[in-house]
Amino acid sequence: MKKNILLLFLFGICMSVNAQNVIEEFKKNPSLAGSQSVVYTVPTCKYTAAPKGYTPFYLSHYGRHGSRYHNGDIYKYTYNLMKKADEEGELSTFGKEVYSKVRLLYNEANGREGDLTSIGAQQHKGIAARMYNNFPEIFAGKQTCIDARSTVVIRSILSMENALQQLSALNPKLSIRHDATEHDMYFMNYSNNEVDSIRLATKKMQRKMYAKNIKYDRLMRKLFVNEGYWHDSIDARKLTIYLFKLATHIQNSEIRKSVELLSLFTPQELYDQWVVNNAMWYIKYANASQSNQAMPKTQINLLHQIINDADSCLKLPYPSASLRYGHDTVVLPLLCLMGIDGADKNIDINGTDKHMDIDKLPDNGWCDYKYVPMACNIQLIFYRSKNYKDPVLVKVLRNEKEAHLNIATDKWPYYEWGEVKGYLMANILYN
Image (cartoon, rainbow, N blue to C red; front, side, top):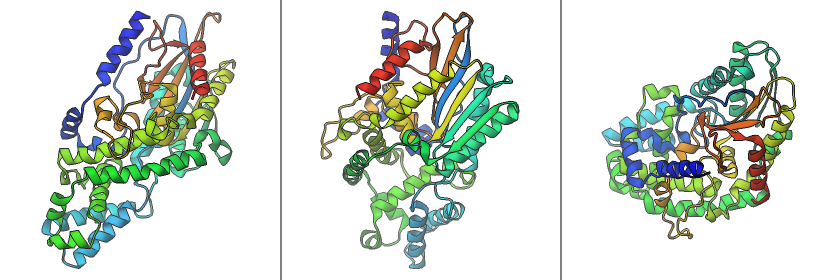
């Protein structure tokens, strides 16, 4: 017990990062300012050997779709605004250069908003290949059954299909069932009116945070010839926010090799926008007081499904896997509900939308890009002993790295499934 408490204490210290450290991170890798737009990092860590006599038998997974094009009107709005300004002679030489890059982004993404990119497809092929190679006892045999589910969104379906293609190529004898249906959405991507209304109310908070944090004068003076134009004829703050979104999202498509916009912003300006987005991810999807700590509850149906599927599959005489493909807005509250790697922490950011100290989030280790990059995932790997009287063990992977639960164990990263199940059921009951 003392050893486990010490590990959790040291883990908390390692997670602690202050705002200045984040700015330093952005100097080294400005793409991190993209929050949920950050590309998936292929893990290089080595896994801890299983206790003697134990082998993996079942894998349970929920993962976000891979890299995609931006949703919404970001490409079209930014392109049309700068096109009009150019036609009216209001862009500076520098502004014309930026406009040419925006035009390239628009041409690539037009009609593909929200769609999976080739990078997203490769991410899921890579994750599937590593599942196969890391746990061959589950995937390399002749009898393994895979049940794969996706939400009904095409980028999630294609993420699933790319993963399954990879697994099928590695072992054509796998028995695979795959589906994407509204029937499963109550646990694959649950929402209700109460939760939607809470999240809608946070938009007011976001507008106030943007108004306080976003400085746009420097960039506007570089982009436009006449100051009166960007003061009176356009929404300068919105354009700055959209250029930031484009700049930080380029990393998700092949055009990243020829187009760069991150240099439009200083490291401090990247931080000023990121810290607002970071706060909104915390408030809208994590264990935040501003949303009545209600967001983890949205994943109760999914966690029930994960537990029930595990109990059923552990009774089978052959290995199996449950693969689920969905969204970051599911992964983050599920991390909180399960209490994985401190995601369930409740951080005091001073209560009201007028006086929220959102810098306290990175000060306390809350950085969204560490939780919800593209293709982020949770995996539970179940181990059985040759002696069937021994307890089933489970370890949790967050983005393919061994993770901590709020449970004492002298076998970390391995936990007894019976204890984990009791802990998860308690989280369901008391949320």
